[in-house]
Image (tube, rainbow, N blue to C red; front, side):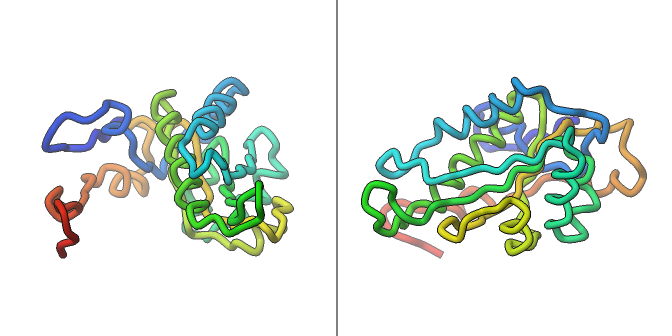
Length: 195
């Protein structure tokens, strides 16, 4: 199913096609090559001083036990649809530089860039990604054995989106809603910040 962005000017096809569905094919299992492709895209994201402060913990649906443990970290409303995804990715960031231990004020920003690369790569593979903030960081830290020196930022669900004719009635309204964004003129200004 496609939900291309309605833009004022033409933008890159992958960016225009990226959206965050909540209806995935529950039978679809990612191939190893697809997973490697997602992680390769993350690896080449920009980062301050080339630090690459991110670490991603992957829970593949092919490992039902681990996937279920990750799923149980999510809020109930996210569990409802994320259970049909093929892969859950926990994104983490090291808030300190490796070379000197000083605080890296860009670690979260850089990890966000790597996460967006994952989402765009998923789109280019005819998959979809949905980033989530609704989850227990404490449970995720325990399940994934994330050390205390890493910050936990988000979960990303990856999978094959359902086609329109496969949507259940309860999915249709949510998935078929029109995409919306703030008007373009509200997100930038030249030379000085303007409300």
